[in-house]
Length: 393
Image (cartoon, rainbow, N blue to C red):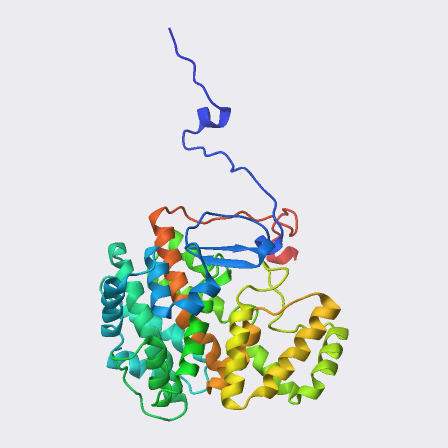
């Protein structure tokens, strides 16, 4: 008796045939499309809430230091005292960067954007790590990035001002050490605290553009450094991380708080893109804004920068009244960093300092249960046609 073949005609003719995947049309920009599962964080637009591993971000910002939040994102639970001490000791011992990496940063064009500098510095870190392809070392590599990225940023900050590099201080927290490396001194504890809070608020935000980018790169089984470099490239864009810089440029353009209302009305009338407002996910306000606004106001009280918060209120009121659109985290973070004394083009690298924790958490998660991310596209170009020879054209 002969057994008849079963299955589709294509399968019988070609044993390597793979059927077309089920197609689904989604909105441009993948809006509203759920592409995978994650245990790292969750944004709930209906309640304007954001949780890291189950904890509301505003509670983490008020209760924990950034190091505790980094540990949480990497490990899934907040550390006890012993675990935190071990984690902090390891992070502090990894802060130094090589003389060669310092030289690379120093040789970059003085006018290149700091995001280009940090992208190059992280790429060089990958070149120096002999374990670059060793996935079992990813957790250690993530910790090294957390420790070394602030050093790279601070080195670039100093070099661009024609000043000497200041080595990291292992006795200081991440926030304190960054001020030390940039300015050679640590400011008032209230300023350090506000900066630490901002790092927690910026640490993670689900499948945003840069995080999704790191997961796509990781899905190809590339290395952690390449995924992080790709994330930095995505974050550089003004529609993503670069928005905090644009917010402060906007405020400086306005200059006088008394002109803020008219400026915003004119901008809306001209359909000008106003940075720092609106969000793809949040529709009724960003859950991180009240906390960051609170600390931006503290910066104004400490530094005499009340004009920026007065301007903030005017711009916020007009946008809410006219468009029902509300600030995102970049809106209070921009003036807060400015009042702390940072140059505007370093706002987004500070974002990198924080977001490397979220990126690493997602890279680790993607690698554990990986499938290459490869969507389809709908072709809208010219229909198939015959190629004419050169003499026929």
